[in-house]
Length: 180
Ligand SMILES: [Zn+2]
Ligand SMILES: [Zn+2]
Image 1 (cartoon, rainbow, N blue to C red):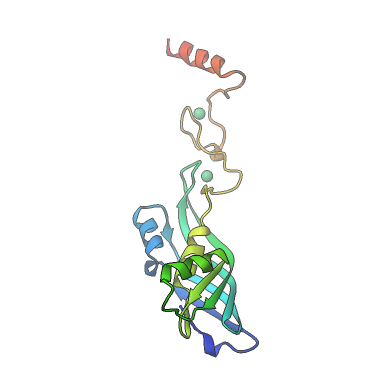
Image 2: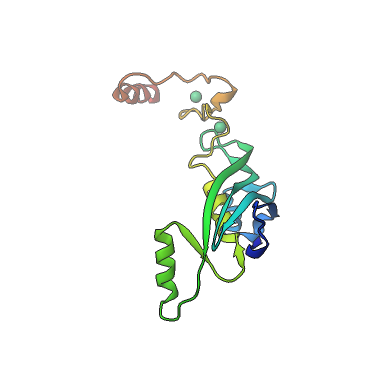
């Protein structure tokens, strides 16, 4: 996933990379941990525009996964995508400055350093792919989840449990009675 800086035309370079998820360490770990199943390669479509030693890359990362819904626990398949814009700046190595100081300086400016004639998108694409995951996995926005009492999938219809209403103390009392 490398861009040859000198080959970026004045009008910009448009390209698409398709890379198996196994090439990304963090995604491999997520799959191994059972958090998700990747159903497609990680596809990155982007446009790179170069102005002297700064290269701006704008694009979209997308891929298909199978996840487990956080509410109803059912498996579902979805396409995750994330739009991004990152800027790379060519660093001229300065012998008197340590690499750490250079990195800190660029981070402050929101720029990613590159050296020589190539930009490697690997780290950026991995970061974007991880950020494409939602905080909560939902099979659909209005998933009703499972009944906390009987565990029935409420998407399949209402269960026979009484809906808990009112003060929590009353439902505790109700449960106490039904146990007797
Ligand atoms: Zn669900
Ligand atoms: Zn129920």
